[in-house]
Image (tube, rainbow, N blue to C red; front, side, top):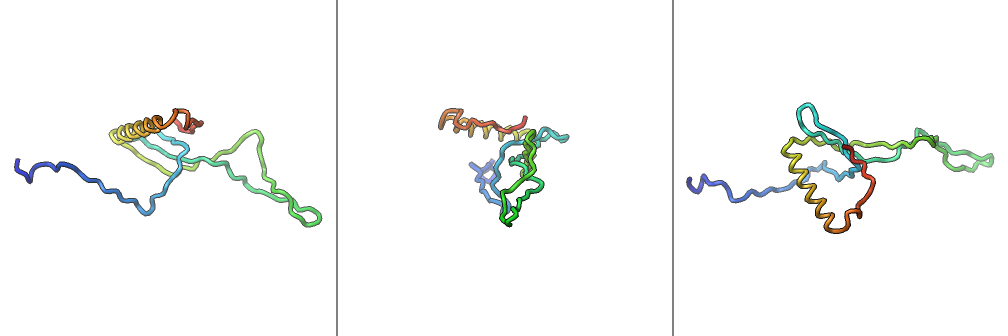
Length: 124
């Protein structure tokens, strides 16, 4: 094997941000394995549902009162806004899992594990 046939000693990756790329908050993920054997992940953030309408009472003197919305005390409505869908093959999923485990370990080294303790909405 001559010098021109030898593999390179390293590979350099350059990163380029697509103009449409946006930072997204993820409160959770929903998904599973699709028929092609890929892991499908649908990231979402949650917010309270907006009311169908709101009204303000008007007093006889013409002053505007407080805002009224239809409420159901028995049930709270929360909307999950799916903002990103990601498909991973097995090998990429393994690499992402390892990457996440490394990052979680780094977070845990910075402070006690319960410092980020919240009721996560992550679905299994």
